[in-house]
Every structure is written in C-alpha cells, then in structure tokens.
Image 1 (cartoon, rainbow, N blue to C red):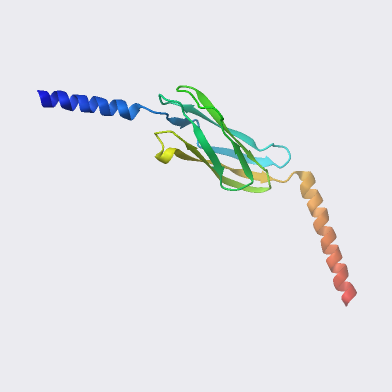
Image 2 (cartoon, helix red, strand yellow):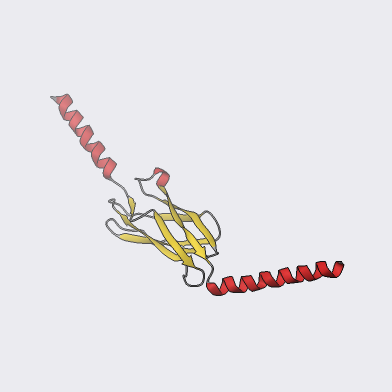
Length: 152
C-alpha cells in the first residue's frame, strides 16, 4: 500500500510540475500577404498569441531572416490568460515574400522557448511603376541602338 501511495504522489507531482510555466500559443504561425501592390500596402502584419500557461511569458527576442523585415515585440511580460502581439513590417520590394521570424521566449511548451513564424506572398508593381519602367527600358534600348548605329 505504501508503494501505491508513493507512486500516486510521484505521478501527481510530475503532472503538476509539467503543467507549470508560461506557454505560448499563436493564432497562426504563417501570415499570407497574398498578392499586394507596392505602395498600396504598408507591409505591416500582426501575429497574435496567448499565454496559455500559468506564469508570466517573456518574449526575449524576435529575429528575422533578412533586413527587409522589421519585427517588434512586447516590452512587458504577458500574464497567464492574456494576449500579446508580434508586429512585422515587410519593406514591400516587388517579388516573392518568403521570410522567417524567430521568436525567443521563456515558453516551456517550445524547444528552447523558440518558435519560427513565416510570412509569405507576392508584391507586384503598380501600373504606374510598370509604365515608368517600360518607358525607362525603351529609352535605354533606344540609346544602345543609337550608339551601335553611330559606331557603324
């Protein structure tokens, strides 16, 4: 009987100690910008998360895979049951978006307290930018043709 009581005590203590600590849960781990036009979108998106643990959650750092993406993190701890935000601003250069945002925290439900988030999508030029680029390309081609003809 003593062994059974000891076993139950160890099990209960293990279950309690496992449940303790801050835990982070994101609404989504990927934000899809879709197809957006440069100049018509400010590039700002927000990853929302909740501390589903029972201790304050501290976001210690947020890093991105390149300088074209600027993150901001909460300055204060997120209390149990409360929500927080990681804001990400992409510079909206035309082309595909496929960037990683690494969040470092004291969350016990993530390996080393780290979680990788992603932003993806495509930035396209506005019609005005495309027309201006077309005119510029045509002008450069005409200059090259003129140089070639002059050399003949």
